[in-house]
Length: 403
Image (cartoon, rainbow, N blue to C red; front, top):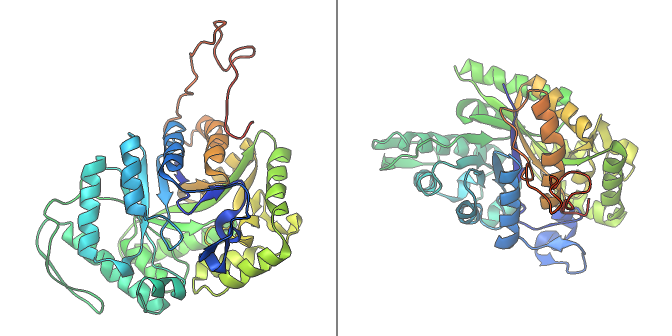
C-alpha cells in the first residue's frame, strides 16, 4: 500500500497568514481590507497552484465548497484545461442539488477531463450555512439524506433506468445516459454516530481531519468494523496542513510567525463562531488546542502535530511541522495505521506546495512509500556555464517565498 498525495486549492483566498477566519469580519460577510498578505482566488493564481501541484507530483487537489469559496465544479473544470494529469477532488453538498443531476454532472466532467474527477461529499455541520443554501434539515437527517443521495447517484450510474423511493428522494426512471468512465471515487468524512454508517455503506475513502495518531486509529477501527459488517472495504485518508523546512528550527519559526499574526481578540471571535458548529469533527478539532491558547508548547498536541491553524480556521485545524524528515516520519506513522490518502495544504499554498514537494516527497520516495517520484524539472538543464542549473555555481534556483 503506497501513499497518495493530494494538495488543496484555496478558492476562498490565500496568503502569508491564517486567512480563513480573521481575514473577514461578520463571519465572512464583510471583507476586512486591512489584513495584509491576502491573495484573491482569481483564476490566474489558482492556475499557478494547480500547475505546481501537477509538476510536483501531487495526484489531485481538493477544492472546498461553501459560501466563502468559488464554486468548486466551475473552477476546477476551468483549471482542468490548464493541466494534463492532475485530478480534482470536488467538494459538494448533497442537500442543495438533485442526485440525478449530480450524477450527470460527474459523467460530463469525466468526459471533459478524461477521467480526472474525484468527489468529496460534504454533508454539512453548520446549520446557518445550510439554511443559507435553503437546507433546513437537522444534523442527523442530513446524514440520512446523504445516504439516500449516494444510493441514487450510484444507481443512475448503472446505465439503466433507476427507481428509488426514500424519505428524502423519489426517483422514477433516473438515468445517466452515458455513465462516467471511470466512476469517480467518493471521499466522505464525518465523526458523528450518524456519519459512520453512511461512510461504511457508501464511501470509497473515509477522510478524517488530522487528529493525533491514537485518535485516528480509533476512527479507522470504527469505520472498518462498520464496513466489514456490510461486506465492504473502505480505504482511509487524512486532511492536514504542513509546514516543512530544511530544519525543524526553521519550520517551527514559521509556525511561530503565523501565531504572531494573531491576537487574543481575533482568536476568541473565531472560537466563538466555530463553537456553534454542529459538526462533531469540528468540535473534536476545537478540543485539541486547549480552548484558544497561543502557547506553542500547548499547541503541539502530538510529536510534530500543531493545532495552531484551528485557532482561527474552520475544518482542518492541525499541521505537520518539522524538518522534511520529521514530516515524512509522521506521514509514515499515519500510513502504518492504514491511511493511504494525504490531503495537504499550507499558507501560502503555492510556496508550501514547493516546500513539501521538493523536501518531503523525495523522503517518502526513498522510503518506498510512493509508487513513483516526480523528476526534478531542472534535471539535466544546463546553466550558461554548462553546469546543471541546480549545481553550485550554476544558474540561481528561483523558488517562491525567497528560500
